Image (cartoon, rainbow, N blue to C red):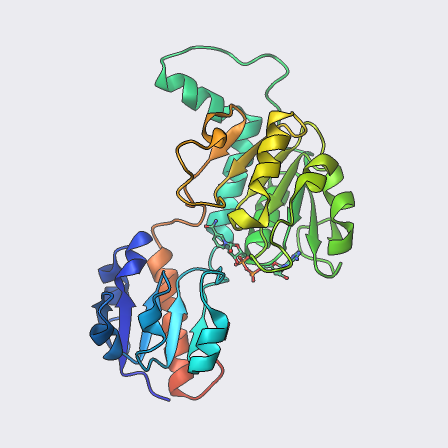
Length: 311
Ligand code: NAD
């Protein structure tokens, strides 16, 4: 199979300028062009790199679609399979960015930076109560889902001296994680943690993984962090747990509905940090994508198995 026309769908503009990726791919053989939603434009390509799913991707005779996201829950996998189109994703590139974002969220909470940032907007000089700030050193963090994101979080939390535990489908050991629990022991794993960081893909098995029972199992002084997908947690149960002080707070990058609707109570909660699905954003994002795409163009041209194949 040969890729001679590669399209960059304009939807990648949600993350970086499409032209930036086109430039970065200018050294590869295929003719690389930026394409919009017009079926004719897509039909001229053999492969398309995209952020969003479009139905035109399925009926334009494409050989391969690459998603610039790690999660592929928004792509109709069986339709790709039926159409015989290879779908690849971008897992493997977000460990550093999301790891640093989660470390930042924990530091913001422990050092009260989110409180000071709100105060600054009102020119307020209020020192926190003596017993509010704490240090992350020795604090237990439980990372649920130990793939690229989870290991990126674990590595950075370990580096700062936190006590890192984690949950995965099997209890095999993972670097930087002192104790690994299997899925069945989720409640035991999260019950001791000061921070619970969710980093699983959204699947049938993980939808609502963190619900009322899980928030109840957490410590009252614990914070819930979600960088996975909004639907991996039951958002109403989370809001109830926050309102009834069953848990102390949350740092959330992903939501059941995005953008987070203006009327959501999460915006107003003092101990909730809201970030706009930006935990993985970084200036080099397009370069990481270019590397994955370059590698897979070579694999496809050589009839080899592609990296990060989803379908
Ligand atoms: P990955 O494939 O490298 O890792 C996912 C891990 O989750 C795997 O180790 C898998 O075994 C584990 N897992 C699957 N089901 C599980 C379950 N039921 N319980 C425990 N562990 C389970 O993927 P990744 O690159 O780490 O990304 C994970 C997800 O995070 C993506 O699917 C995406 O939805 C989300 N994500 C969000 C952002 C963001 O900007 N917030 C960025 C990248 C990825």
